[in-house]
Image 1 (cartoon, rainbow, N blue to C red):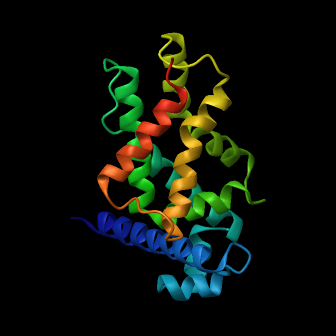
Image 2: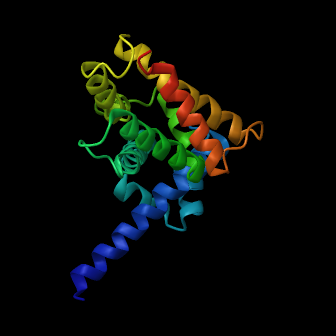
Length: 198
């Protein structure tokens, strides 16, 4: 490994440490209490190092959001196959979303906070929509094939995805248990039943 490769690994490691520290601190204290000094202490880097990667707190938060969205989309699309039945793809994708949220509660909490915050830039407004793009696509395709009800896209999304968000919130509050696979599968089945054609 040459010096450039080692330098790149060190740079990426520090940047990842800063992003991971930001995720932890935002979920603990909220966006407004996040400051670069505490962030640097949590990440184990100098304050100047944090500013090398991010010009401001807002830039850092937006980049963290984009990273989480990309990780979420990769997880949701795992196992997606255009040759399978709509229900099978739906069950796979929504099941993957639930699994991602249960395995990454900090990411879920961050998405929840971020989606309703003034930190959204134009680019991340588009990303905010794109987080559910795979589900929109499967709903549109299923509607065309008449395997789901004739409802508007947003209403289908609310019926299919809204229960996931609610149940994950309840799970994180200790008022529901999604730790067991059968509970997660039951939730996803209910989501499909909300929109499937009669």
